[in-house]
Image (tube, rainbow, N blue to C red; front, side, top):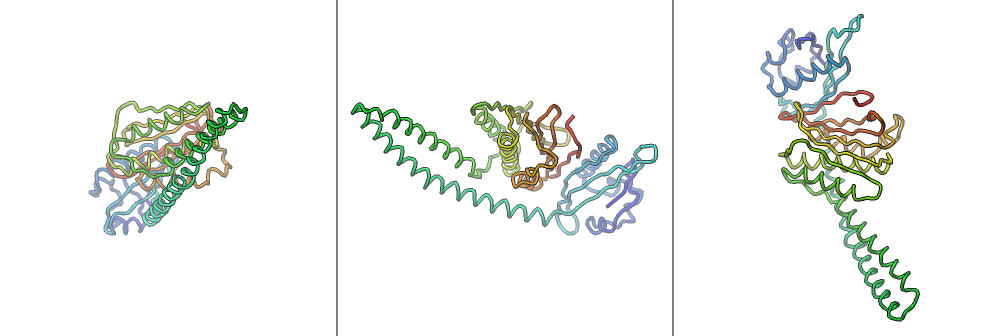
Amino acid sequence: MTRVDLDGRHLYVNPTVELASGIHRGRFLGRANRELGLPDSLCRLWEQVLREAIASRGEVGFAFRFDGPNGARSFLGRYVPELDPEGRVASVLGIGVDITERRALQEQLLATAAQEQRRIAQDLHDDVGQGLTGAALMADAMVQALAAQGRPEAGRAARLLDLLGGLQQRVRVLCRGLMMVEIDSGRLMSALTDLADKVDAMDGIRCTFECPDPMAVADPRTATYLFRIAQEAVSNAMKHGGAQAVCIGLRRQDRGIRLEIRDDGRGFPPSSRLREGMGLKIMRYRAESIGGMLEIRPARGGGSKVACQIESGNGGGSTHHAGHDD
């Protein structure tokens, strides 16, 4: 925990900061981060988040990685403005929580979940898929035989064949969705475009993908997790939010990459059990594991917004914790 003034100079430093940084806390006092020789990318992140906290007079969360004497450690941080009696920002309280071990456990859980998904997808393909294929062949033979005999049951048999064909297609879609396929560098845009097109093809659902400037995400793991976050957010919007329109947005910002999914559904009520559901927890785990933070809030005008922002160059992300979207 630290306390800094409006110029970013340290007024108070918790002993834990000294252990994490390897810098004696006496050197912190009265100095800004840049004066301590800390990495420039981290200094830029901390300075920008500090400005945001001061400007908004509200808490700002962010994630970052720090290479200290104990090796690379991952942290979740918060800057909390402290106001004077006139409501002006007097200083800012900085709080950091070491999540290195938690992140490693999250990675292990995600890997286990992905392995189980692949197993289920393979079982669906090999057992259910092949069983449906056999049933469809039998139904097709039945349709032809009944039609050749001029039997009225031929129409019902044809409808059965159509039903089996629809179930086959559904199983194929489920298998593709369950398979955790890594997205190659530069393919995130095309993967999100395909996702929007597939959702848009459903009856009553309008889904679009917006990316103002062509961009690539160099790290395949980051691209894969961003895609999975978008996939889960879109699924939640349709299944639980009753959305009729969904927009997936991907863009660069001064502080990095931002993925945003908006919908026109019912949103997430504050007391909704869905907020603590496994899907949202996995989205948060994925965001944190690639150095980002997930933001879930009601969207202005109705619906909900799910966003993940990843800082460029430092493996961290930030977001405001607020009520409604501006």
